[in-house]
Image (cartoon, rainbow, N blue to C red; front, side, top):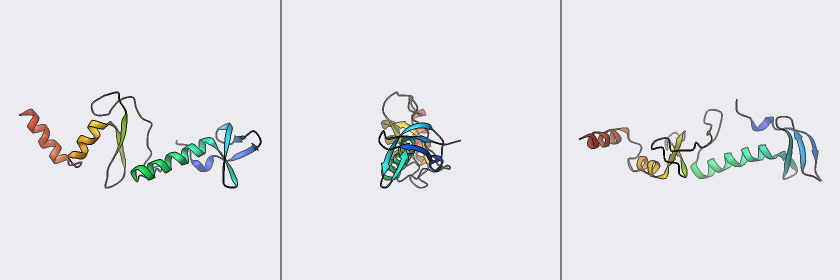
Amino acid sequence: MAKKAFWHILSEKNISLMEGVCILCGKVKISRTGKNYICNNKRRELKRKQHFKHRYGIIISENNCIPKKPNQCQICGKTTTLCLDHNHLTLKFRGWLCRSCNMGIGYFKDDITLLNNVIRYLNH
């Protein structure tokens, strides 16, 4: 089960050392957010959610979680920098693709009929 941000509650904190005890993570470094202090693991979760919302318009929730990047593209298997692929209508995460595969899908506007036509053409 995924760690939920609201489970990261500090039971102890040492502000001078910026350390604390999170009930979920144990002993951790802490960060200040306004008047409050939070577990750095919670801070990373929040930053990750903000990044995906800002960059892709995707809201991460239990129904739409983003798995960690694999070592290779899920279409061609290249081991290069990977891009997040998502459905532009539903904003749901689909997978991690290399730039070429991600752009290829984009050029065909995510249209399965067009992609099937490409397959028929290549088989001709």
